Amino acid sequence: MAQSKADYEAMPNGTELLSIYTENDIETYRDVLYYVGQVLGGFFCINREGKLELRKYGNEPVMELETKHRFTSSFSDFITRYTAVSSTNMKTETAEYYHLDPDDGLTMNLGVNPLLQFGLKETREQLCMNILNDLAVVDYVPFDSETIGNPALDLGDVIRFKGGQADENRISAITSMQCKIGGKHTLKGVGKNPRLAHAKSKNDKNISGLLNQIIDNKEAGKIGIHTFTNASSFTVGESDVKIISIEFAPNEAVMAQFFGSVIVVVNADQVERSVVARGDVLIPSVEVEEVLAEGTAGNEETTDSGTTDSDTAGTDAEDETGGSSDSAVAAEEPVVIGNTKEQTLSVELPVVWKEDGQVVVHFTFEFNDSIIEIHQPEETWHSGKHSIMLYYPIENLVANYRNIFNVYARATGGTVTVDTGDCLAAIMGQSMGAGEAWDGEIKIEETIKKVKVGGVLQMAAVDENITWKIDELVKRTYSDVVHGRFGIGAFAMPVER
Image (cartoon, rainbow, N blue to C red):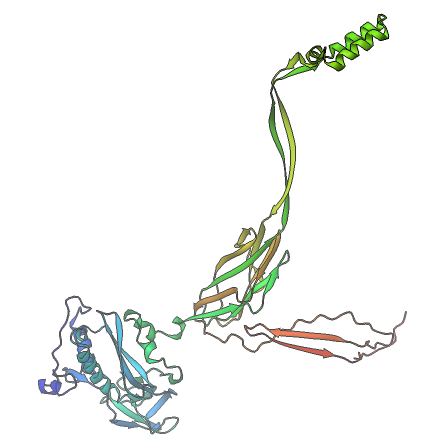
C-alpha cells in the first residue's frame, strides 16, 4: 500500500464501517478495489514504485504545456463537471439521487455498489454526499494531445495548456497516456458534455435502479414518438380518403412501429330481402246438406193435375189459420246428400322486406409514396359506432432521411364518418428526436379553371378564390381572392410552311 492507515482514515468515508451482502457482483480483488475507490472518492492504480495507491482528482496543475511542447492538440468546447451522484438501492430497486445546489452539471452514476446497500437512508446519504464533495472539484476540459514527452506525468495528474487554441484559464486531467521512449507522448483526458440546457429534472433522474443505466447510453438509445390527431371530421365513401399522415426522420438506420386507433360511425345502406314462404294447409272433412221445399212441390203438382181455385183457396186458408204448419216446417229441415274427405294443400307466399346492410371498410398503408400490398386490414360492420386498431412495423429505415407514412380508407355498402379527434396515431422508434406538432410547412392545393388565350397570346382575366387551413386541433383558416389580368410573353419567329 502506498498510503498508511492514517491516510485512509483522513479521507471522507475513511472511518466508516462498510458491510456487504451475500449475493453481490464482486468476483475478483480488482472488483473490491473498484467499489472501495468509489466510496473513497477516487481510483486505485499501481504507482511508479509498484505500490497500490489511491489517487484523487485535484484542482492544482502539476505542469504547464505550451505550444512548443505539443505536436498536436485538440480541446473540447465544453467543461466536464459533476454536481450530483446516483446510487442504486437493490432492496427498493430505485436510484437514490443526491445533488448540490445549483444542480446544473453531470451526474456520477455509482450503479449498484455492494458497499452502499446496508444502513439507514441517512447513512447512505452521508456517504454519497462525501463522495460528491470530492467529485465537485472536477472542472476539466477534455483534450487529446501529442507532446514531446515527460515520463514524470501519471494518471490523474492535472495539467494546464497554454498558447494556441488552449484556454489558459482552464485545467485538464490525464485519464489515459501512452509514452514511447524516444518518441511522442500521447495524453488524453476524457469527459462528458453536461448539456446543461437539456439537463433532466431531479424527479426524472430518480428512476428505477436497474434502468438507471439508460442515462449513460448515447442519444441513439432514446425513443422518439411522433403523434397525429385529425383536426376535422371527414366522411369515407367508395374513394380512398387519407385519414392519417405522419412525417418522421430517424438519426440511425433502425426500425419503427406504427400504431393507430380509429373510432367510426357507420351508416350502412338499406338492402332489400325477399323469400318465398311455403307451408301446408289442412282442410277438414265437411258434410254437404241440402234443404228441399217438399210442400211447395206438392201443391204445384196438384195444380198441374187440374185442381180448382176453390181447393187452392181452402188450402191457403188452412195455412193462414195454422192448421197445416207442421208439414211446412218438416220440409225446411236439411237433408244430408254427401260429404268431403280431409285433405292437405301446399301453399307458397312471396315475402319482401328491407333491413340494415353491412359496410366493408378497407384500409391501405402507404410508405414514401409506395403502397404496402402485403398488409391491408379490412372490417365489415353494421350501422353504429365501431373502433379499429391499426399496426404496422416499418423496417429498413434510412438514417437522416425524411419519411412519410399515410393511411387511406374506403368504404363500400355505405358511408363511414370520423369525428374530430377520433383518429389517433403514432410512430415510435429509437433515434427519432421528438419534434413539434407542426414545423411551419404549409401545404396548399389549388385548382383553377381553364385559361383562355386570345390570338395575341393575352391571358383572359382570372378571378378565383383560394382557401387553405392548417391541420391542427385548433382550426385556423385563411382565404384570399385574386383579381386581375395576367399577360404571357414569348419570342416569335417566322416559320416557312
